[in-house]
Image 1: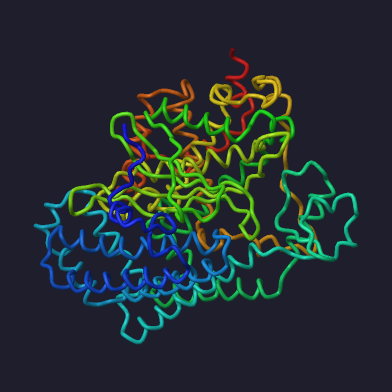
Image 2: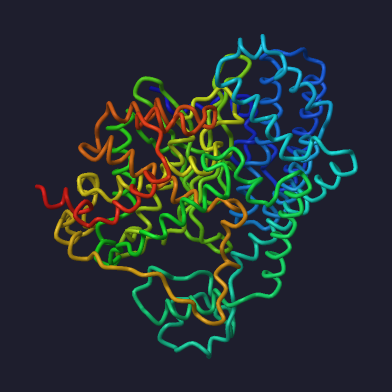
Length: 589
């Protein structure tokens, strides 16, 4: 099986020996973003004209998706580069590209003529009845984008909506930058014996994160108080962002930003979210945590990757292979590229693993779509490309990269997103992989956390890096302890570091709702045998394959054979706190 060949996207570039970031030739330098942006905007202009002159039919949806793909191919890539590239010039160029493409998207979402071409399709019952369910769903999603952007407003208000959207994009970017900036403190203020834990810059110490995995209480306390110290400019930015979001929502006809943001999700309304959260809050008081230091020697990065490869092979018939890269394709020398290969279907896509800490890299574990999958006009499938970004420590002379339980769980979580992207074989890139409602998008990633905490799975790969010893079941039981929420610490403002306020505004409940669904899927489908191939195939068929091309609750119903209620969600989460359930399989052997 040939796994070293690139997709059609790169074939023409390989012939000319031109390679830049991700194999895009223009991106061999920061200036290339301007060229890539101009090409995308030119293609956009041609596709808009084509959409406005094409009669109602499935071709309209295909043109809209090509339009989306032309912009996303550049915007998604730039969205990653602007925060992760070690070269400031690349980050700056990518940020400008994100702004320009984002502005174009908002203008298109208020383009009357473009909207009219889609309306004519949706109003034609005969044509709509002839479309397959995914095409109908995508057509309705494109119309939904027009509606929440204010297409129904008069010209002056539409322009105000575009201006507000662009302002919000700028404020989001400003907030994200501020959320990851380190705080400096005179090094004399900290006790000498803990200074080595932090980066030193002249007479100052830089605090870049919370150091939550450090075993020294004083280091964690210092990092918490210094990193979360309030910043007046960041607070102003957040307040302006929240105000602008609310103004936009009310301008386009919603009571609040939350009412607008929750359209299209499984929850649908803020009232339903609050019912879920308040019911859960009434019953949820504690959770369990695990002492990290006992585990680290068993969780080398290499062992964890082997574990993931074994799990994916057993469940889905998928293997991960290291892929050779071209000069200029990577942004940092320690990034690794994986080919995702199915035993029968062949190459499914690529995962770039940007796993290690470095200067100016956010301490944030993320999945980025670089290119979405879609069926091309020539009948070939455009292979998805994603990046997984973690902040793992480098190996040392005495040990490989060792992961805490939290790091291992995050690795499995982000790999869950990656598999969603690889296996979401949709016709349209607008609904590829994780391009689905937020409260469903976290289900595949959180389900992977259940595999990561199951002894039968962990026992397949966890070995002490020096002795080869397996993880003891007794360790798993004896190190559990009750963990309560941290009390408020004066002169700290965690919300100013909470970057999810940008991407998950009014939707952070999604992690809990997705966890509830993942819990039900785990208990009903995988708890008896976490390597069950038949269940793995069903999981792919019912939940992963559709991306956002199918109503999420229909996907959940297909997997669980029932439509869960709010009470079902709450019961699933509460049952996870039952220690007897958590240790059942550890005690049963």
